Amino acid sequence: LHHRTMMEKLSSSTRTTRTMASMGRIAWYVVPILVALAAHVVIQLRSVGHPLSFIYPNFLLFYTGNNYFLSQHWPKLVNYPDEKIPPKPIAELSAHEYSEDALKEASSGYTKPVVIRGLFGNSTACKKWHQPGYLASKLGDHLIRAINLEGFPSLHTNRTIMPVSQAIDE
Image 1 (tube, rainbow, N blue to C red):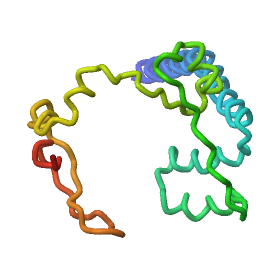
Image 2: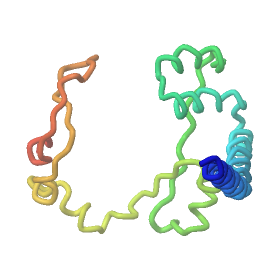
Image 3: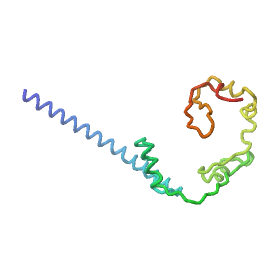
Image 4: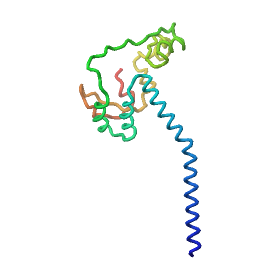
């Protein structure tokens, strides 16, 4: 009986050692990925001029899911300027000017929005969009979440699920 107990302990100890060893091997793969991901986030934040303190609220939202806690700490972390910042115009391209290179240049390397005027003007969707019943005929039975309009301002508590054909006002 004593011999059997010792063998079970040894077997359990060996199994634990193997489990720890396999976890160590996994850590060699996972830790560099996590470090690279964290470095990427920091580099992206710094490249657009945001302070590193922006990570904290996003971490709280992702990790804790606690919106109340986040709303209490966000104003302490971010100092918004008092002066009004004028809106920046959005770059525009015409359908004739459009190319991959022109879009990349106009959007500063795909980091800013660009309006491309007339690109889809000849598409079937644009030609039929204005026709009464077209959208309902294409999406009519598809169920969507909708908010019954209650005026402004509203908490939008009157929510329902309905077909697109009932939700749109043509």
